[in-house]
Length: 433
Image 1 (spheres, rainbow, N blue to C red):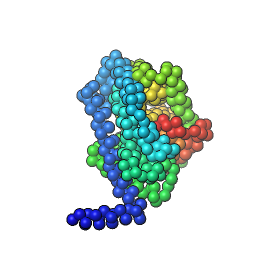
Image 2 (cartoon, rainbow, N blue to C red):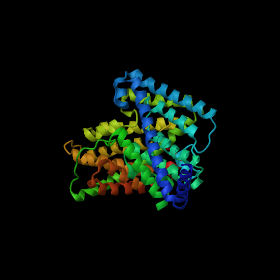
Image 3 (tube, one colour):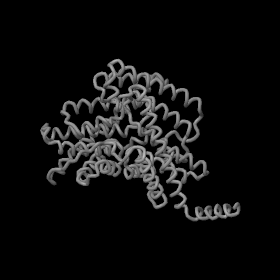
Image 4 (cartoon, rainbow, N blue to C red):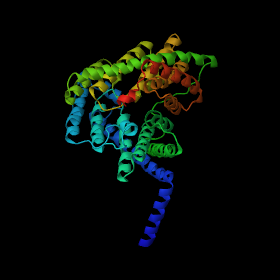
């Protein structure tokens, strides 16, 4: 029996030594499964914490709405202070071993992600997003999934190049599971981080994305994160009206990024005490939410409301401005999270506002406004991330409508071109994901 096991082991080792693609097929599947599982655990932790605060609330906006005005003011402060304490003491007590960010590990690092720092920052993120920070929870999810790839590669003592590939597989798995968008998740990592496209690099990431989404479907179901009603586009010539939306997104995206920069500089002047800065950031979001609770959280419920119900142009303009300000405050104060989902939120509000203006404020043209909302989501995402292919595929995977592809392609590439002309540096060069 022992000799048989030894022969099987030797045979398997020889096969893997000769066919590296097969080895990475198997490892990518393991990373895809474990990455999706970590995404599920993180989301479960978020739901459990939110349930402790308000058992009946479904979503952060509903939680904020149910709270009295003073609760909306205090809870973000408390959550920010707790998150700051975790970062202030946890990161200082535990020495870092590896990169602090998965994009850094893939782009300029050796593929080694600090497991300790990732876990501490994930716990801090749970405190922030569960208390109303206007930030996305998907960033920490992707970081955790990428950590799974890094840990497996380090366990097997892989070379830096192979380790970066496994981290890329983990990041792809995390994005695919978080958004139920395997193709867009794959393109994000290729366009933004990995930058290499070959059979040896593409196939493992595809395997990781597929396995991750299959596991995510088991835990979360197959529903899209955004509820897209049926719609139809108008006459073919009206596709050119989306050029204006692409131009608008291209000019607003740098403004959005500048607000993030200004906020980061402001909070940097408060000092290096994370507890103070993140508590002040929570206070800023709390003050805004006293007037409008829709700024809490990553904004899934608000975007779904924009897609499914009628909003006046005044309400859209107000939430557009307030969300940009609230996200800048949360991000600038150091809250651990992503700006990816808030970017989609801003794009939805901007697209719906453009649709109202173009249709002269007529609420009867719901299908037209809806199409502008969806295209705005993709065009603004493209204008902020400089990843037009990913943005196009993201919205397509959310809608599964081929009708939206042509205007989406047009608006995404125009917005990307204008935004990058105004500000050539990528948002991910400063690791704001």
